[in-house]
Image (tube, rainbow, N blue to C red; front, side, top):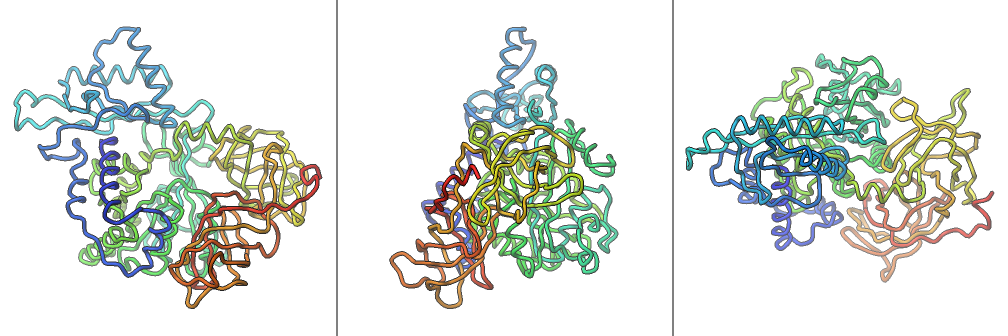
Length: 605
């Protein structure tokens, strides 16, 4: 079950660390560009495949790990006719587990606190599930039975009528309309990214000629070429019972948002090499919780696929893979594509465990392990025939939130910082900014500082109104995206600027120091080298002003360097990840020090 897989992966990760070294994201990303030999850890794979006692028919696996003290997973041996006092205690416990899971909790029924699978008779199981539903109703939560399995009676005939169950309890937090997740969609050109998103969000299968993707295009040339060149969004909702809410059941986005308990925002990114800068910016700006990497069954791992995989690894974003065009791919070609993918995932550069999804039990197992650093689910679908889409949508429904309760509370207590990645000027509304609230809690009529401007200063503004998913709201919390209308119009507002609370005391910088890894460069990099730097929503050319303890660096070198923004100052934080790219030159790094511009009274300007 869920916690068993997570512990098994941690044990396997420790075992692998002894043999391959520290799995640092920089090393993992760098490894994609090494010509290392492939690693086939068959024993480890077989252990993973048997890790779930409910999904496996193997008689040797009878236990789970002991119940975790923290987190959103709870074991219950039985819940038969509890007293009112006991019910109140159980409801309080459920409330805490839901809070730990940011609105979602997993209950394992028929399992002792030590992880032993005792099992329950049919009558006791039914009574326990009724009690669990009663507990959930008192909190306004919903209950969904993920799976119910009989215990193996090979060794003990008494166990023949005993079963265990895994149950999902979901409650939208009181301060939210729904549980929100952002999923970035990556993949090479013409692999069916926009088509798949269109099928999922519109509820209509494709006609084989790209009809479903038309709703995702934003520009005329995209309709003409069939290729995405910008960043577009669409939403997919799930109600409390797990049923899909898309534009087949609802006519507007507002209706989907009003009736869903879980909302996924797909971020459709370009796959062509020509638009790679736009793709990188979209991936770094929108801070997705997950990446859905699309691979064509007919063409396999080609083009920008490896590079997109490397971006997910470098940014430490959990990802899963969807192989499309199953309906037009010969079985042997499809098998070769899957084998090639698994080879890439198990190579030293990735060190991942590929997990083919073929049944609903596989989906539940993968959903429980989706936040792990090792497991990569692989789906095979067709947007024309619909094969595999039911497994994919069930997996999307089970994806857990990316933040824990403690981390979320900590970020909400910080001063407001809103990163801007879209700017608009609308008639009768004025300046509208789209972006992500990285910390704090933002409300209507809040006074903030906008900047940095060209001279590095920040200008006071007021938030007049807020919208999320095309619906008005009054509050935005850390980790949520929104659109904000300001009370004044300012010239030269650009992507990469921030809105900040005055208590944050934001300062702009031109110079910053970073530790970088050069993934590829044809010759050597010296002082004066210019490259495009991506830091969150910031995308700007920077000049290399100095290399510490070296005259130059080459491919695979690690060095501490000093950068200078070429055009205007930016607001950046120590510890932020950066990507840089110019032509074929690629590299990643982490900011270690910033040098603020000294401007007198810039916050009061």
